[in-house]
Length: 134
Image (tube, rainbow, N blue to C red; front, side):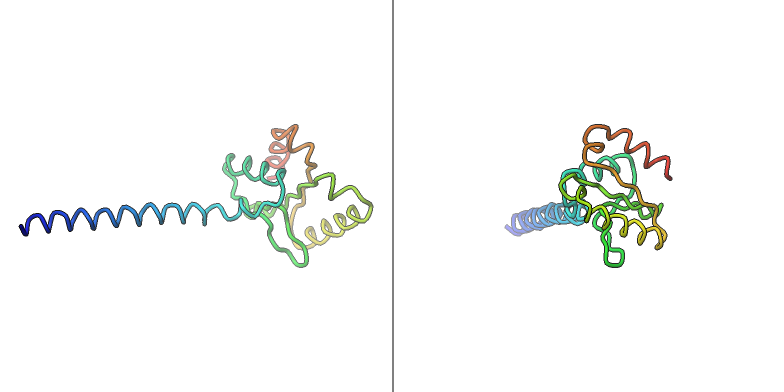
């Protein structure tokens, strides 16, 4: 009788640890993916994934003074701005982008800007330009 109690007790403990391990694995995958979740547009997400798949350490929505960098390669101090047509085509927004570029450069960042069209249509060329900047 004691043998059965010990046997089922060990199986129960093993099952509990297995369930906890699965839960922790899910939690860690969410934590590891926080930067990807911060991407604010489909073009940011597409470029983030491409850079990650090519082995780059990528951060998204990185604060720098009163600005935020869309995507950053902090190892190389490269700020990558993903410019969608809807948000970067007015004269006011273009002036804001120039001020932001100047601020980021003054704070030691290399700034690269890519249009949504370029990211969607020629991602390989975008990656090539980023690689050449490194």
